[in-house]
Image (cartoon, rainbow, N blue to C red; front, side, top):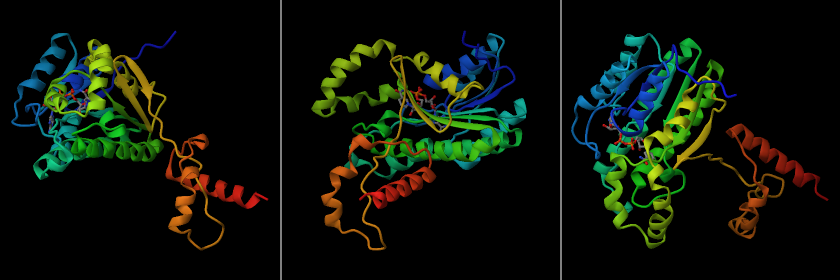
Length: 326
Ligand code: NAD
């Protein structure tokens, strides 16, 4: 039988936990015994304004059922904000075991129309915001020899979605951040994974205007396949995977996972074996690359480099294979 997953004695920081996905994670971690710092700036779905009520309401809900929670209303989007969030968790509960970077909003537009106001705000909240909170959290976790990071990525970045060049650029950056935290943190009991969630929320509502303009090929998908899973696009369908990744039992680090309509999947990055140029110090020509382009992209030779070091191992193996060939 699968062991019960509980968070007794654990302290979780969840950013953007006043609504949507983060709220559901906070309620469920608290229900399973964890102490939660509920962070939320409380602005609109487009990231305007601020209010204490979103975080406070979630804290009230947790405390009403006997759980442990404190509210924090700092923005993740500044270094001081990130430090204040982690300091508040340490002050209230003495440590940080779990950091779920989840805060964010959307400012969708066509690629050619994304100005600095739309670019900077999105990079600041999603990419820098996750960095600013994770860094002080990592220092605390390292001291205690234990930690779980769940960074919130997006299928938009991993697979592509129209009108979200700013958002996909920021969310794609989080994949790199999670990988490095996983590698460096492995010496200190710290695991880090990226979760790509899907749920109807304020954030989804913010996208609806964009859907009206979506390219024809995507419209037919939305009309057929999207509506087939629509009633399962709830925060609660994402929480089991988020909480597994945040748990002591989590077996993964350096991973990328998707939760979508009750389907849970791992997203794996692979490289082809590729083409290795002739031995020696002479670089190949552009024409050489053009001539071998199919081999470079041959999906029959996939392997999975887990680190940049694995890539050197694969290159050395390809060179040995070339040199051994008759
Ligand atoms: P949501 O709007 O319901 O919740 C996001 C919360 O973040 C809000 O309560 C908001 O006040 C808070 N927030 C915004 N800026 C903040 C800041 N500077 N500091 C602190 N808090 C701030 O949205 P959601 O759908 O629950 O999204 C949660 C996360 O999941 C986001 O990172 C989003 O990009 C990501 N995501 C969502 C979906 C989806 O389908 N809903 C898909 C992929 C990724």
